[in-house]
Image (tube, rainbow, N blue to C red; front, top):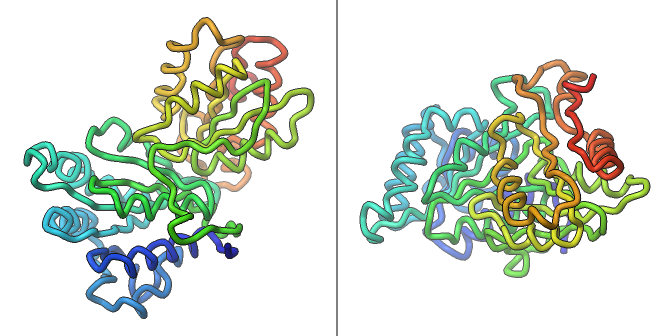
Length: 335
């Protein structure tokens, strides 16, 4: 094992797959000469050259479309989308073309393409560059969707995504790029898509995090007073690990889902619906979704810190749920 920052873990995963498979290529804005705007492709151009690591024009529709064609004809392209919002101008290439080729061609043209997307608040990029946007991909059959929660998952999920024969979107919370932890590399570090990870055991509540909220729920659980939590990193949204979540909630009888995005339409609605439907007679309290409010991400640092759910707020919500057995109000309604 070696200590890596999350951006280094991404670059290491890309290099390992490129060494193992000559069909893996990387393309995107500033991924070659500059090593990526967040330095997540640093060093790749020097090792693999400009034919396999390509800077592109500022045209997401163009280079994502090129990647779809390349994937359908024998390559395994990895595309970097600098900011999640930029995916919007090329969404047709992802959800209408890449996600449907295998179906429309009766299996003759799979699209083994990986799309890396930096997302999330916490670093002061403002309303137009700080969203998570999982929901843009969530309702698209034919896609797989994974979310990194730190260096190890960034490494392991990315390698699994590149090897997959269908298009996979990997979201990378950019506030985690500087985080540095021990990382298992090589085959032992590959993380299968669709498998959640129980990060901490507990008895009173299941705390479900994804991406940037995983460190938050771990912090909340470690500082809990009077209750213990089982913490799950969902890791993959498409497909999500239904049985791992249900098994945990059967034991704890309570579920709190912590999301970074707005309340309305968040990814936790699907999980909450499934758990409430299948475990209705088991639950000791309502399923709680701890989210951001339905407003754009603020630019001012104090407001941005309030916007993103923090560990203390999660502890407050869990404590109220356990003590009252009722659904706690979110802070923007209670205060």
